[in-house]
Image (tube, rainbow, N blue to C red; front, side, top):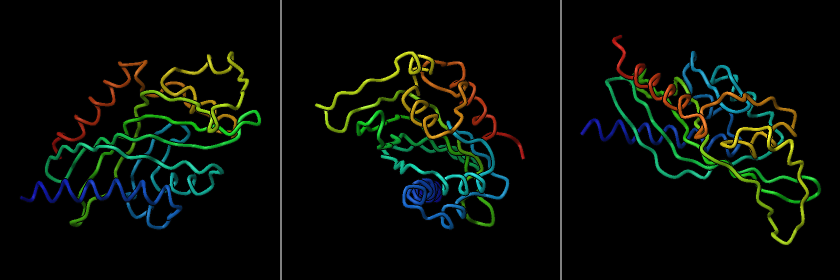
Length: 195
């Protein structure tokens, strides 16, 4: 029974963290992370606290559509994988567009003083798209520029770089299965590490 409660609490934690991110609840979001946490995603690499601060300064609203989450437990540690779509609506070349980026958000979660906190967060990028909000809108894109980006997160990269963010070209994604496997190996090793 305690495993069921732990999984429920972890699912509640990671969904609340995304809810806070999507609704600008920065103080509450910060409380989801432990002090020595680490985040590595498309536009950010650093501590969980710094991630919250950097998120609060982003110009674009980028809510998450959350699907399923899977959780593996080992004592006071857990790994959770959340399937989600990042959604960003913005003007690109005068046309209202929506960026949709499908990803797996990988959380390393740790229980401290009876509560679960996020110790690490990374993402695996599956695929993405730039979709006109109004399909009859014509749009011309710099295809050469788009083709420079990795296929698993090209639209997200295009959108973020247009806002001045530097995007890491070596993130795990469907088009680089060896990087995906490396993350799975790392979090599994962390989960079952002798403490």
